Length: 116
Ligand SMILES: [Zn+2]
Image (cartoon, rainbow, N blue to C red; front, side, top):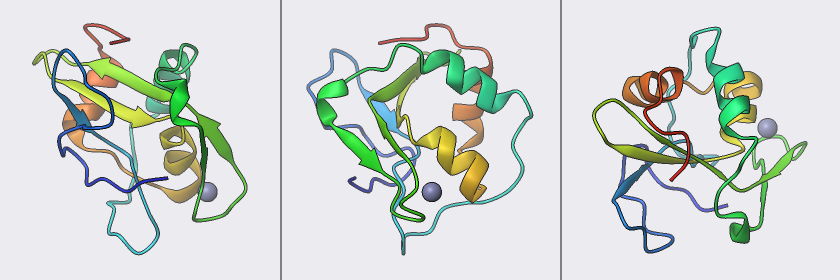
């Protein structure tokens, strides 16, 4: 899987609206760890029932090699900004204590629009 810093511009496909990357982690690259709201994983699982961009193929967790996912979660927050995260973000949060940016967490917990 490719590494992108959190909140960097999303460039994989030509999107009709700009998106920001969240959760594209890689061993050796810094990522914030810490507690997240209890509802966050459930909210992501709900959004992930309709993954986007499945063409991007399987994503293997490069930290533990135990999990793979496919597709992406796209979410639009109250600010109108949209975010693109790999399905693996769910695994990163519960298995590797990844703490996504606050604005992404807020968007997931109260999405304006669940899919792009
Ligand atoms: Zn892992």
